[in-house]
Image 1: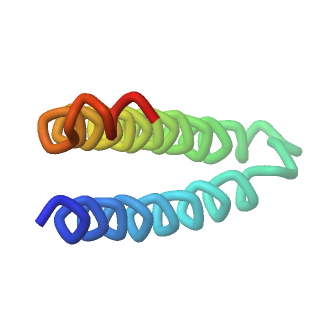
Image 2: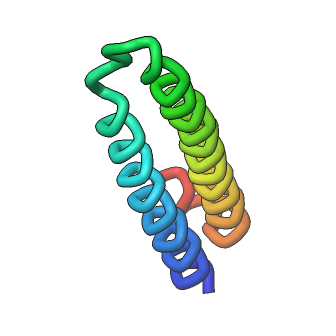
Length: 87
């Protein structure tokens, strides 16, 4: 069933996105004060590197969501009659 499989995939993406957003927020928040001494620079840079990796993961989630959208539209095109698709 297209509706059920699309909903399950969307739910999984949404849950993963929420977890990633929370993790990214925590990473950025922990480094938001910036380095206030030379001893903290390495720690700050580590947090920023981790945030960049998580932003890359966020980009991947967006690509997966777009792929799901495209696949759903293709399947709908196959299911609908010409008249239904024209509406």
